[in-house]
Length: 90
Image (cartoon, rainbow, N blue to C red):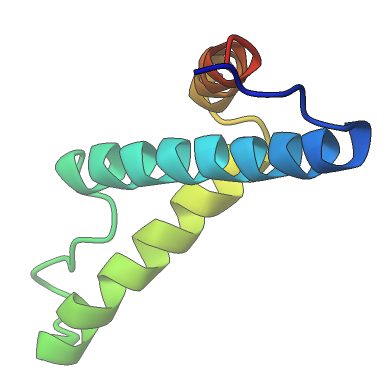
């Protein structure tokens, strides 16, 4: 099945969507790594309670999104290039 070439304007939209998806994947990966490293865990002496434990994950996610938005570890670029290559081959 042959897929016709994508016109320029939709291709730009597609590229933006691919970049956003790649950045989201990198942010998710970074959030998992930050949580595994113990970022956002409540220190025993601070004692913020259950509420602090529940909301600390939001802080970690936002930190990960900010890291990915500033370039992160380069994972988003690699993912974007791979996804773009896959779409360009269609």
